[in-house]
Image: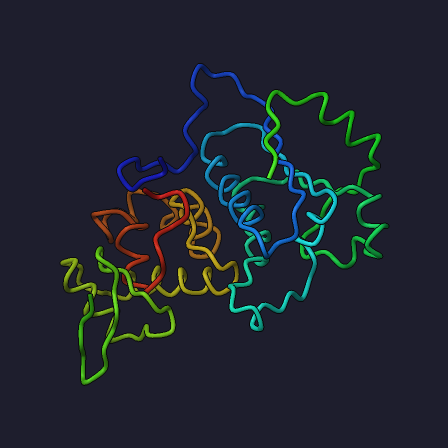
Length: 136
Length: 110
C-alpha cells in the first residue's frame, strides 16, 4: 500500500466504491505506551483509501494534542508535530471531548491543531453514526 | 552498514537509508544519488530540500500523494504531478528522494 509502484495524484477509490465512516478513538497519553503513535500511523495510512476518517481524543488521549511537548528527558521523539500534517492528508475531522479537557485543566488554546470540542453526549451521538470504530 | 566520505562515516540501514538524520549533508546526498543512478540537478535539489523542510515541520516523510500535492502548492502545478516527480526520481519520489534527503521511509510504505 502507498508504495512507489502506484503513481497517482489522487488517493485510490475505496473498493466497491462505498465510502465508510471510520472513527479512530485515542484514549492514552502520548508516551509510555505505543498506542498513540501507532494510532496516528494507522490514520495516516488509512488516509490513502479515501474513506471518511475522523479522530477522537478522550480521557488521557487529549494529552496527545497538547502544545509544547518536551521529550528530551525520556529520549523519545516528540511526534506531536505530526498531528499538524493530518490536514495535508485530508484528515480534517478531529474531535476532542470537553469533559476530558476540563478534567485536566486544558482548553482548546492548549492544543497543537484546530479541533472541534464536543460534549460526551454529542460524542456518543457521533459514534452512533460510524460504520467502524477503532480504539487506541 | 555504512559508507565513508572525507573521513566521515555515515551509518545506513540494509536498504541504504541513513540511520541518523543529523548525519545528512550535501555530500551524503550526492553519494546516495550516485548509488541510485540519479544525477542531481537544481530540480532534484528543490524536491530534496522540500522533503527535509517537510520532515522538520511534521516529523514524518510525506506519502507520495501528499508530497505531490504539497509540491504543487509550493512550486506550481507543473511540478506538482506524478509524471514530473517520477521523471526526476524514476524509482519513485518516496523511495529515492527520501533516501537522498536522508529521511526514513515514508509512513505506510512497505
